[in-house]
Image (cartoon, rainbow, N blue to C red; front, side, top):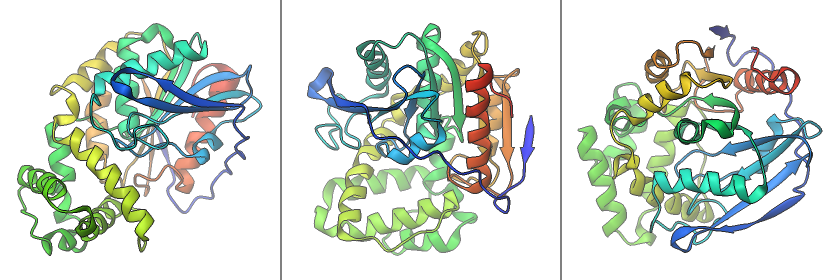
Length: 327
């Protein structure tokens, strides 16, 4: 285990992402077409970046963690997310489908084995994919993993209000119930029955709440921001309302399976994260007893917080040089 200084430490600069040398839409089941792009060195170390959310989509900045002269960086927008089509579509959009999509993309791109990096929900997918296809991995790097238990959803949808009472007041003003399970049902019904034009206050409240838990600054949302977040939240509620299509304990069981695989694994966790708390990561690590973990003090959910960025860059560079993670 390694403990790093927090946000006061200067950040190691990200690499400047190179332009995509390849991009396209991969047809998969249910009429979905998955946007993907490749950056960096075509003959470099293959790495797949899995975004969070669900539904957040990838951004070019994510490729900045990887030296473009050493890595072949693959960015994938999951079903309904980012540039994938149809946008926001929930039909045939399940966790098992996303896992199958990852493997379909690997075969489509002709990649033998790849490093997989995921944060939050992306870490969830990384763990489940690694358990299903351990032979296709060269390494697994997880940031602030979402363990996808009922307790984790209850925490996000109200359980954390005692730590963030001001942010919670935005929900309370809209009539949100305090019971965590009731909160998720209420929010799902709001997005189902309220006209999109009348959901701006709900979207803004969600934004302020998530930023408070993530320890990132909130901002005033433009109409375009509202539209984009509304689409994302509908997809998130589709997943959260179905317990992420993951049976209770499945992520922990998957972690136990991959612990036996001969694959380098490392976890990076912000100790101040209230979206995916360190306490949940500690439970996950009980299933990964020989896996390295970097605990980053005074950092929340933000992958670009200075100390988190520095820690991630160091791990990625060590993997390129040594084939393993060295904090």
